[in-house]
Length: 444
Ligand SMILES: [Zn+2]
Ligand SMILES: [Zn+2]
Image (cartoon, rainbow, N blue to C red; front, side, top):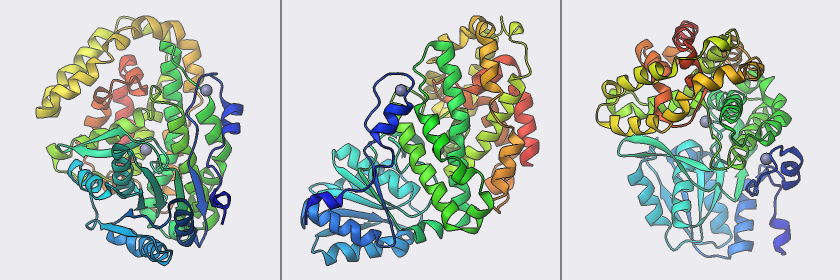
């Protein structure tokens, strides 16, 4: 067998990247390939055998993902005579630094890591492979988030969930029947996460406009090319219809690639992701187990879009002379909200102080152009309707969030990262509070 037949289609091709790039800068090569088919396990095993012989690999799964796909992959690999070390994680594992270190230790001396699962298993495999300098393949089992192909992993360090850089997998293998039968809640979460790119792209664009950043149309043009396959079919995604769920799955893969193409300096996520990170980081303080990433991001989308709607109505000439007070008010709340973690949060917020202080001069100057971008964003009601049409409610109750915790994140989420987002614009303009209250009403 020649190695040639073991190559699968790239999720995003270099020629599309050249065609859609508007910045003229260097983007990383989009290397990840996807094989999608009912025989994904046997194809993976045959590919491994052709590329790496029978040398030992590490297979990573949890009891649920093992039952739906991992056992098949293990059997296929053994059928090819491949030596497999299998690390079966506990039920509902959490991607802690300690567990990631166990995975790293188990992977040492192996040819590569194959991770079978979605959010957590993928984060653990990607992180361990990246830190070990190893190759990494993924077998996604649910269309629940865009992290399969992104260049970050979410790992809990000393109790706080952080997003850290980690190289994406070289190869993905998916059985459509497995992906389509993933629980509805996971499909709804993925639907929210893929729609986030629509708002985070405007955040990135406004940031670039204000601070001469390197905005490129490549990510948004890639997403526009696939968007219809999922955004117009929430009911079908809810019912598990293969075309719609695989459209969502493909959209998530493209979204992850688009994120990694944007490069390390550009934002991987906007204000809608900050509130989700806020709730993740608050776990040691509140005891609230974070909800699925995509669902929390969905609440963030509603808040961001509510901010954009209010900003679009303002006259930018009135926005001078506010920056110092807006910064000081948010900074003053950090110690009470974050306790022992306050220093780290304060450092992040201080990282954008200079930029925030320039809002007094930059917002009035660029307002006319900013407003054209604000007006592109659809309403919070539009997104909430889409989320609910998947067949599951979308509310504070389903997010297991109190009204207080929601408002705390809406008002203060902007402080946890040094990146400029719509939450900073809205706070400076004095509309964040109203947007937060309106979003709370939508979710109540
Ligand atoms: Zn570009
Ligand atoms: Zn996300």
